[in-house]
Length: 83
Image (cartoon, rainbow, N blue to C red; front, side):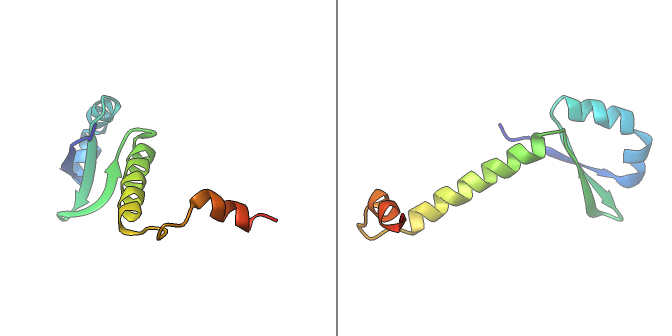
């Protein structure tokens, strides 16, 4: 499940922090801006690491499609590399 990120200005984030925290607790994420430039993200605990894991998994799968061992056997390569 991918969460939608809302954008909120720094002043609004400051004045509505309690409300934003409740919404984050419910799964929302926010990008906080200052002078219309992103400066921070407000995410729930653990949510950021989950997103990073999902991104890393997608990147690894993409690499796996682009590169091959050219017919070599991965298990045999592992065994050959062991003392």
